[in-house]
Picture 1 (cartoon, rainbow, N blue to C red):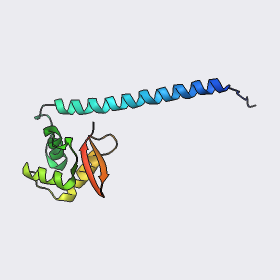
Picture 2: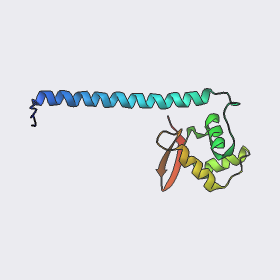
Picture 3: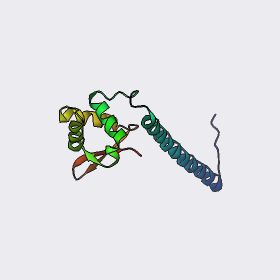
Picture 4: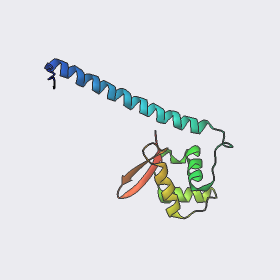
Length: 121
């Protein structure tokens, strides 16, 4: 046997308001967790962080602040070369894509048909 629940318009509005408040709070908490993750990474002693490989090179660039502004994969590749990281461009592109996943340290944006990467805020 099913029971029908009848709610007034005012009750429905209250529920919607509470859901909207919850959504705002969740967004704030998620952004805080990303900031904490980034701060923890930046506070680590460089001896503790493994900067080997293409991912390590990109993490090194993040630590130096080079990726605070938008950079293309070619820009990142050139910066890595300056620091002594010698990799093919497609390998650097793959590392950038992996670091720019949903909860990664980077954000990926498409501008004028090109992907650009920047440090997630």
